[in-house]
Image 1 (cartoon, rainbow, N blue to C red):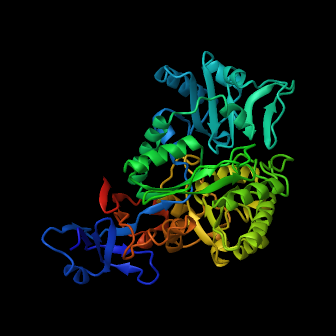
Image 2 (cartoon, rainbow, N blue to C red; image 1 turned 30 degrees about the vertical axis):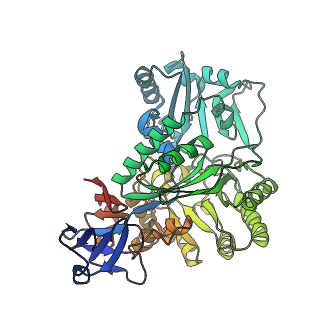
Image 3 (cartoon, helix red, strand yellow; image 1 turned 45 degrees about the vertical axis):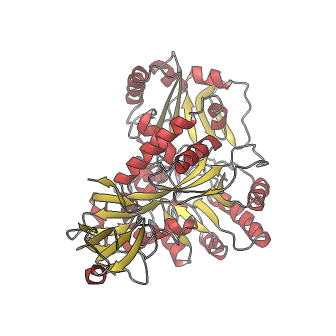
Length: 523
């Protein structure tokens, strides 16, 4: 007998063998059957709970294949959310208010500002921050996470002054006199992070749980947290071992600058937590113009930053694979893509058919797409950036680069496994339906279209936000589609995305979310 029977709706199964159905039966934590109500009736008993969908649409739970879960939770708890800040004065007012609200903390931390949206059109400086809060240490992370700005007290605490040498793969931005402006880019951010007290395992647990509740409201039941420190990993493990995780997480260990990977934590796998991958950073970020390009950016004669050189990545990734771990690499610019694909080619010659991922893969040319396809890599990418950060792209990228920005249609046409994701909290809105809409419309927040010929269909985007993530993390046998035997991780939408106006996709509402057959959110 089944525990729950869903009926009277449209089921978009994401299973190519049976893409549509009208009823689904759950036994325990897994799907017992999918088909018509008549097919299910003989499985139901007097104690079976019946859920009348009322014509609504049932999908497998969304899988955000690249989202910094604990950082989303940090913004929801004790970090100042600076997304949408329109001016330096507004930023300063927010810091003053937050300083009063979080008076017990020695450090005031914030995230989310974007200089492209600030009316002054520039990065904040330490003087701007000093004017707002001068009696405590302040550090603000730009929306991309690849750079941040500190006030004078924070710079002093980190030992950063005019005599500090730029670290490999990082930049301490300086004024005309050689003094730090407060802005730190790429690996220079690590100089600050070492001074900021790391949250405790208990604090990380609170962040993870807050993010999980937030994701349930969006219909997200699985997520990959791409790059965490050991303390965060221990927080995940303790939650998993206590049976306290309410979503399924694929967690990657972050390779930190200078670490040689001589000792690694034990791999871990349970129904709710997988840890078997290590993430590396090849280059910088695109919206802040630090991704490594072959040609210069539009606005300045710079070509971005390589955070790891090819020989370094080859040594580190090889060591990770020899230890039994899978490899994922943050790579955005075409210069960095050349290096990473060369490394993956050499790794494939040593250990064929290993699961390897490319995170972002934003600016490949046609030959690089073909090369990635031959290497059978999975791509976790974020067309939602076109909506949220497209204004930055149009400001910083030449027309030639814009024409191949996030070329997701080319990826699919070349047979690559595509997983869509949000990279939250890089974006303010991590709603999967907004990400699907961005993949279809490819419009930025001002209505400008970027590389429209790279648009994909709603059906393709739905698959990439469900099965795509399951394939990328190597767990397609358990999740990603409404198929018999898979976990009953489900989302109910108020309408069918395949029959909706693409302009209204982000307006579709999540009615309820189920994990392991249990209701975890209801609107």
